[in-house]
Image 1 (cartoon, rainbow, N blue to C red):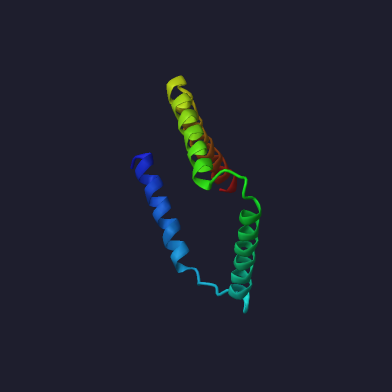
Image 2 (image 1 turned 90 degrees about the vertical axis):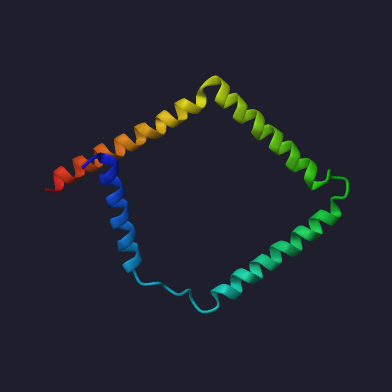
Length: 108
């Protein structure tokens, strides 16, 4: 069995175990507290937006942030940093597998 198939089987076993767990219900009044919190956030943001009339419109701010994100993405891809980040991710997976094997060896 190849390692990828083994990982898929382990993931499926884990998901099956999660499905067997009982579904917990929130405490009484939890939903009401959350909704009240959301209402207070909405009302305070409305007050802040009306008092800051000199600020630039929201779409300009979103467009600016989008341009910065696009420029950073192009920079990462063109310099090869994206491949280095992905290689780090692969190394983390290998390290976690190694640690898992050691812990299984120590337990047995």
